Image (tube, rainbow, N blue to C red; front, side, top):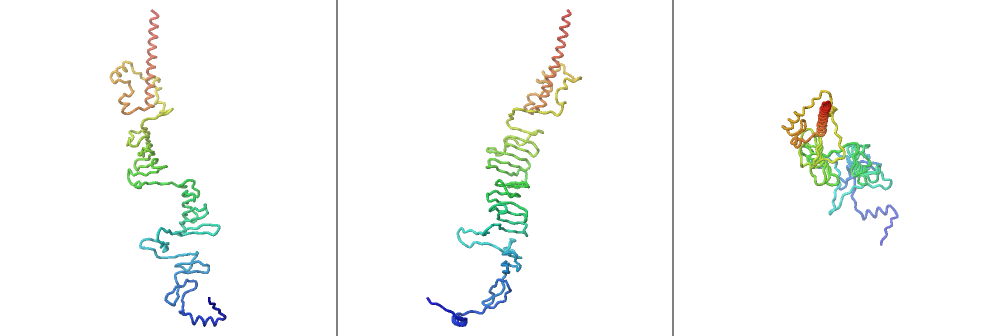
Length: 338
């Protein structure tokens, strides 16, 4: 191993002058610009600028952050993007990453667009390793918690998806554009759902009933049963139940006292003569004002109205019995005198 000992500047100058050849470099750049070669021997200004606080500007001489990029052009023929790109040049399944690293007391990092009107942040302001999308510098848009819970307008979603301060709209695959288009909300699996049909209404269904079991129609009517067994509800009825109802109690109200049969006992009520009732029965095979069997099969019965009619017949029958009893008592008195 050889040792070079330099004892004086003159000796060094002589030595390097004899053994090193170099070009003379000239420059025309400005202070704080990163230099670039404009020829083989000349250095000029580049488009990158570094100020005294180490802020670096590309396309600007007034960098306000450690990296400040300004461009008045777009990248590509149709995309309105700033000219900055991360591109993978390695082969295989290598990934691209943009890392925000903190040596101590992590505060956060992210992207801001639109003069601060929209930003993506990863920080500890709302929780460890949360991802936050801001509508503006002070208003939260939505948050993805490190737990996997997603919240809109809330910083502490307690479920996988939570929306505060607003509503959620599901328009379906056809955007509810025409009558018959559907939108579904599935619960647990596709076997359990709430569906809406444009122009029809809302249905709730479960496994085995793809057309739903509970239906709230657009007209305000409600139907319970397999949706494939009916397409509409007759008349002005508000509730239809397929296969009937089993209940411990039913209370049916009437509009007013005039709908009940107490008027039979009011003065002036015309009680049909029994001969007239007999003739009606012989002709129609049912009591007056009572629907026939065919009518019941075709139209059903109004429970309140039918109960009032049956009560009316009982009250009329009571009047007939009272009248007959008076006649019997009269006959017994006349017979007793004899």
